[in-house]
Every structure is written in structure tokens, then in C-alpha cells.
Amino acid sequence: MANDACRRYVQEGIVCPTNLLQNVFTSSAVDNIDHNPSSISLKAAFHGTGISLFQHISEDVQGVVQTFDQSEPILKCQSKRVPLLPESYSNLPPAVLRFSEPDIPLVEGELSIDMSSFPAVLKGEFKWLNICG
Image 1 (cartoon, rainbow, N blue to C red):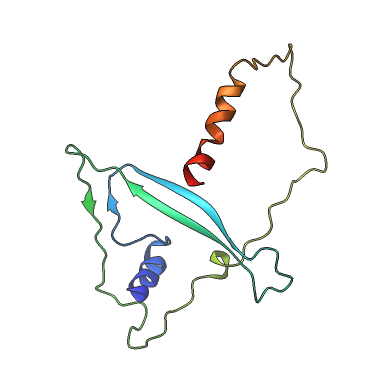
Image 2: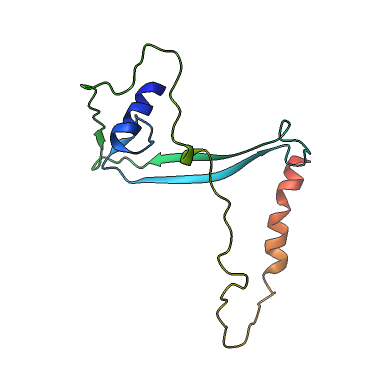
């Protein structure tokens, strides 16, 4: 399966689960994964990204199964080793501001906050503590 995914990347230039349907609205959730971020060595820490894809199938929209041309094998599959993807998929440059001072737009008008609903909202925020305790 991994070799098929790599072959597909070479042919189509994308990395995508092979079981995703085409022509279906697809949404995603992305979050960072940190294990032991306070570690002082890289051997004991891990930082990654979790990506979940959700396809919204309905009676009207069932989607189309992806087709994949395997007539020309690009990668040899006799090996148990999976070829590496390009370095751009694993070695990303750090995100930095292009300017030392970001351009923050001015806000005109008066800022007012309605604090009357704050106690009820705060009570709801701490409700889970009573459930778990």
C-alpha cells in the first residue's frame, strides 16, 4: 500500500489517501502533536502534525471511487522498503514574519465589553470540573 501511495505521488504529484472519494465535499482538521515538549534532548521529544479528513457523503452525492493507472509501474515493489518522499514533505522551513514590525490596522471607535453574561459563561467553563471530580 505504501509503495502504491508513493507511485501515485510520482505520477500525480499529490499525497492523498487512496480510499478518499472524488467529487465529495471534504473538510479537514489539523492539529499539532507534541510528546514531552519540555525534554532537553530531541531523542525524548516528538513534534508532529495530525491531519484528519472528513468526507460529507449524502444521498444526492455518493462520490466517485478514485482510479489509479497502474499500467506502468514506476517504482519497483519487490522490496519491503518504501521509497522516500521528497525532502520538501519532511523538512519544512520555519515560519517567520517577513517584517520586524507587522502592519496592524488602526481601529476606530470605542471598545465596549458587556460583562453581564460573563458569570454564566465562566460557570459553564468550569462545569466539567464538577462532572470529572
